[in-house]
Length: 334
Ligand code: GLY
Image 1: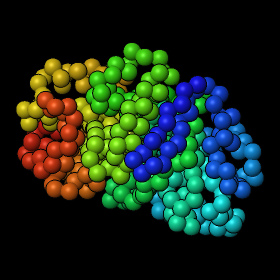
Image 2: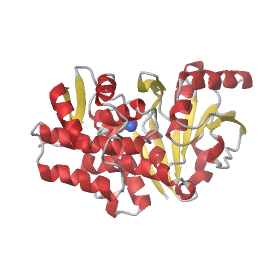
Image 3: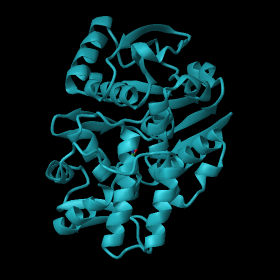
Image 4: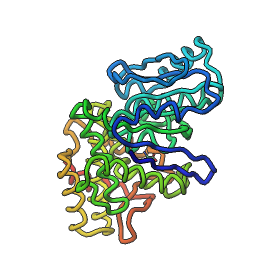
């Protein structure tokens, strides 16, 4: 078992526990005052949760469509009908959709109730459940409404990955590929458990310094500007990590177009993505103009088109990228 400690500048601390069979550590992560636990999950998750206190299960629908304000309203109404109070705890059990929704409901219900996450997918374990980003989608784009709301702890039980559908695993690998370029760690050469622990450590180091994404945390969105656009324009028919994989290739090609990196570095991106057997081209049904519109609605876009791009000093935020370069580079992922 490994325990990675989040130690935020704000003084908030909490553990992320990674290992086989660590689900039984859940009761130890609940705040001491918790009287009851509202377990937010999906029918398909099938993980037996024992909090050790009175508990009730609240199921949400599957898929990105469930990441909506309608789900939040329904969930909070169900919490109110059960009489959930600030002396209780919300437990999100599932992948990124569940932890984003459970976290946002916990952040806003009664202006804030404690939350603990039990991450059951690779993507949630290495990214979504860690770091306190919560939120839902709007028809205009992904994750456009949300809050920073840190959990009291996160459980990453590797046993839950054994029954993970292939496409969910691939989606997690897309997010994992991103970490290669944040630090240069050769994650693909590690055992899965070590990869997960290292990814959580990398994320924790960044979030500890910049919880509210005033700077460095934006680097965790490498590959996401195009990735999120592909997801929303494609009506979430392509999984998040697969869209991020294409977004990573695109970001490398864009950095090359702008003279920031050489072709070898682009090929290195392609090698990592291909080693995980992830897609490298935008699905043909997705139109360039729709992608361009979606990219201007990205949360990082304070000043025209904004990307996280590789360069001589490593990854950095690059604002005001010219549309002509963006359009020209889209050809490289077609
Ligand atoms: N998923 C990116 C972040 O947590 O900042």
